[in-house]
Image 1 (cartoon, rainbow, N blue to C red):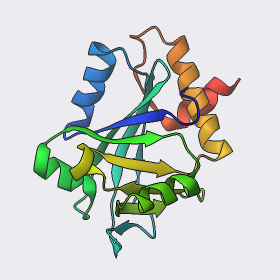
Image 2 (image 1 turned 120 degrees about the vertical axis):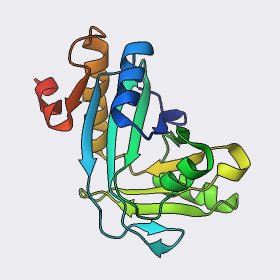
Image 3 (image 1 turned 90 degrees about the vertical axis):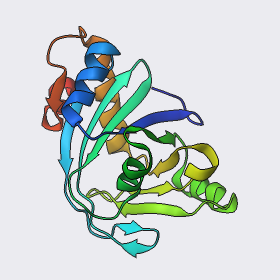
Image 4 (image 1 turned 60 degrees about the vertical axis):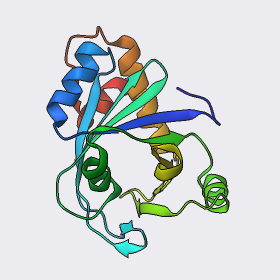
Amino acid sequence: MQPDGSIIELCHVVEDFDAAVEHWTRDLGAGPFFVFDVPVLPGQLYYGEPTEVALKVGFGFSGGQLIELLAQTNEGKSPFLDFLADRGPGLHHVMPRTDFESGHARLIKAGFPVAYSGQMPSGERFCLFDTFAAHGYYTELMEMSDAIMGSLALMEKAHAEWDGVTDPVRGIDRLPELAG
């Protein structure tokens, strides 16, 4: 896994989730992907205004790099739909492995607005800064709790043990199988 201070995740927003997973596993050797549906979470904000966004996401590693595939499954206002309308599918955001508070302060000081924010059911805050006009992608910050880091470690373990063919798409509920 990427060390503190580096980019830990690359996220691609996609229109056809299944085709994207197939491309990343078959053609690029990333995976296996752990897939789940994210329901509308309370408290989501789009440029400071309430929104309701539901997603289908998949996480898989390529070496020490986390790859996120993301498809929005409803029509709530979001930077994901904005991106698809403006550019089509592709690299949407990067996520540095950094302390949430210091990363947030640094990006605010640099003049970037928060495009999207919310809180995970387990309490971790996340936000997407609109760095798109300046850099061609958004920048995500996530509070990296022990639970999140533990899940990422299991996904990375799955990648290290994976034969590149068998069982390329798994439900997130299968992560505990790797803990033993």
